Length: 113
Image (cartoon, rainbow, N blue to C red; front, side):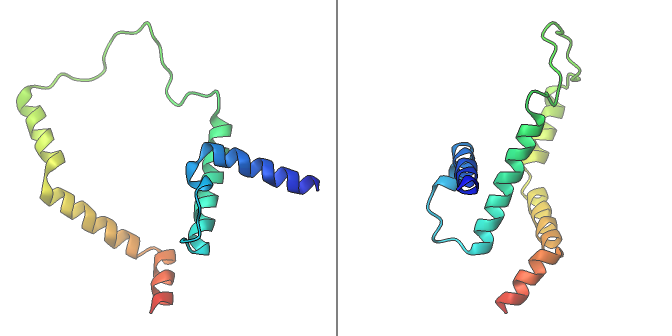
């Protein structure tokens, strides 16, 4: 009975923090549900560990900026790089290639065949 209470309490805490856990999941496969649960639990534990600890310290009195001022021409160049379809396409292809080499991805593909 005590274990059941603990599990229900933990589920309630996770459902409050992660909305995806409060939605019906009948359309998902068991592996997908398990991965979502693991991700939510891991993220929850990471948040608890870091609670009260700032990743970046903030000093309100400092007004100096460490950013270098750039001219409009450089800003336009950077904007064009960010919006470049060719660079986006290359990055996407690299990502697909990388993911396809992961062991977990290959085992899923083998099961589908």
